[in-house]
Length: 249
Image (cartoon, rainbow, N blue to C red; front, side):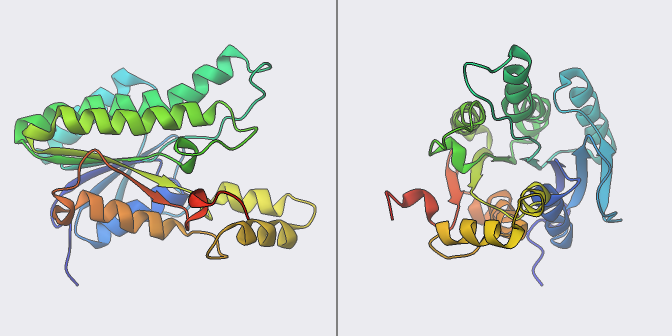
């Protein structure tokens, strides 16, 4: 099998489970040396991944960690910003702490890691950053405020940085997943009154009549991180089975 990231140094955030875990594992299969960051230990230990506990909202800690990675490996070739969390509230009942948590986890945290790796990428005149945004950054889903605010911002951050550093050989793109079968979605189904009916209802909303898998997002991240995507920059890719293109049914 062709190893599309052979000997690349890849940093992936939010690797304890879901999309982050799938991405880290896939990158390792394709020859990358993967450092995974998360607030929590991984759900399943993968010896190929160098898991480190980290809080992406702590800019100083992130900077120190990236400096240590650069000292150890000599470079940072790929960053996948996957860490984040749902924050949903009635806008008029939203507390300042909720607003700040949403932006810290889903936008500022990604910026903290981007800002930490960019000097290394500029120095080597090469690098690929992939930010995991959301379909919420394209379409507004009622009762999901303020999460879409952060995800719109993350897509904008990706485009702005991609243009800013294009001449230095750095590409910055984003991926916007729709409904993906990650642990929090599985928990949502399990905790509903009728898990099978809830899942079926969600499947029927999608044109392909099935829910996406974490590996499908991971493979898109792999492509964007690889040299195969070397002319793709400041772009967002939707992975939602076509759902966001529907006007009504």
